Length: 365
Image (cartoon, rainbow, N blue to C red; front, side, top):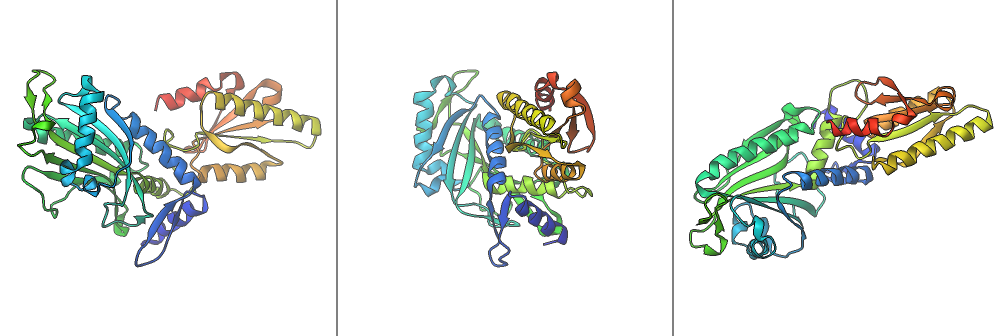
């Protein structure tokens, strides 16, 4: 592994995102508190992607066949979930349609920079599409998925669609991986896509065509995202940006903490108490607006040096924006500084404009 990437792994471990085992025989990775918070945000965005899908929630099953790349269509769980679609969601039981589920199981990745600590969370989307348009839909889903990963990356060029030519595929089946490349160190698979044909005699899986109403046996496109390794890949991507600054360039929508609050207090006790109360008030206002803040809420710095050190901590945690309050400006005229992690520049905002100003920033992204 390159020196640059090793530094990134150490940085992310020191910041509390994940722990990396350097065992040469079996290097593995385990999410820590900040990494778990990031993975939770990625999972929420997956849930809201393609919102017209039927979400069957978290599925518990001992059926190992249901995680097979092509054999899942023969599993009892797949048949059971399809029956739930017909019985519980008849208005969406037509072709094309989507099913989402979440499962816990062993990783399906054999080659990667690192192996996740077991078990992993599988985010599974099944697309039931018209059989004669299976390949067309497959290519469209590939493109949409790649764009989705590029959107949340600090380096979109590292994502590529990789055909799985070495896999033994049944007739009519296709398979690709979407991988994040980290140069000579290797790749991490962030999503697996497979096109699978249902057995011709499987009348139980017929769906009415959404346009004609005629019954047909759909083709199935399955997307599998292993949440933990995918989260680690995006975190590593945000650290491996080549800039001199030691900031973690996380997408501001996915960042586990969207804002941080810091103030410079002076020696006068009364003014310090006033600033502390104002920081607590701003914290409450932003939390009520459902903006994600660091667990500590806010911090007070005794001097400019201490404030600089705190801002550097925020940057290493990937916090996109820091609100900087001081006694001379904020307490007297209500003005504060909104500092951007990416540009390291600050703009002046009046306290009355919060939190609408921040909500617009995240909404417009």
